[in-house]
Amino acid sequence: MDSALTLIGLPVALGIIMLGLGLGLTVEDFRRVARHPKAAVIALGCQVLLLPALCFGLVLAFGLAPELALGMMLLAASPGGTTANLYSHLFGGHVALNITLTAINSVLAVFTLPIVVNLSAVYFFADGMSLGLQFDKVVQVFAIVLIPVAIGMLVRARVPHVALRLDRPVRALSVVVLVAVIVGAVLNERENLADYFVSVGLAVLAFNVLSLAVGYGVPRFAGVDRAAATASGFEIGIHNSTLAITVALSPALLDNTRMAVPAAVYGIVMLFTAVAFGVLVTRLGARLAEPAGQEP
Image (cartoon, rainbow, N blue to C red; front, side):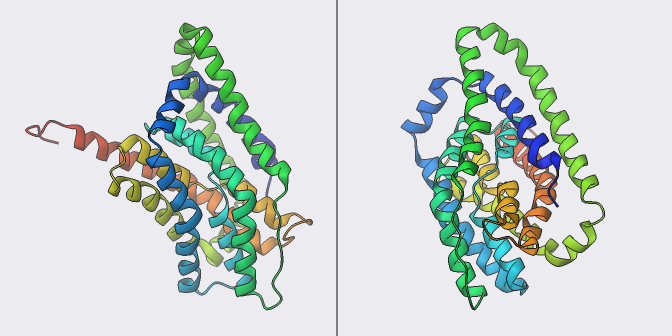
């Protein structure tokens, strides 16, 4: 189910992309997040509290089998994926907010993910089970996200003209990598796609769309600006499916293939829905930015 593309290729590619994101960031970007923490607090609240509750409702509504239901809850409890930073970068989101949320979410997941999964196991399975999240998974997320970004920011601070020249090529590379990931994921799972989608396709799609909508809509309703809401939408709507798959398949953790199916389907579905979401919020932002007397 998992492959070299997701376990090795994708983290390496994302590391390169995060380097590019760092080239466009300054320390002041993160200071703005600290000075105006409203968006971060709202996004974290949605991620930690609201999404698991909504996912639980979807699981019951779709009547999923216990193993698939627990797999869905595992996915809901997983932190935002590093891919969210890329999408936010491409569609005008507040990338510094994304990076901050990814870092905080990854730490919180050490505590929240086992709680959500253990409570779900008690509900869906008579004998229950226990789960602890391995520390090395958290370290991996930090390594992929923070180290390349820090290097990029250092280049931006020391040689800004180099960072400026690299911006456009890196954006183009990001698009190429993203397309390669989508194509590779579909080709890698082509023999299993039908079975996966029959099992949980609609539930996963509903959860993905709901996550994106909540991640964007709740902050906007609370008065957060569009860039920060876009970042929140991607951060909450794009979960770390690789982490969820690893937890499900690991002999030291859940050790259950069926529990990995929702995350595997999600890892493919979200690549397309995230693009659609990005295009939608970009067009919406462009329409709202037009002068009042101008035709759309």
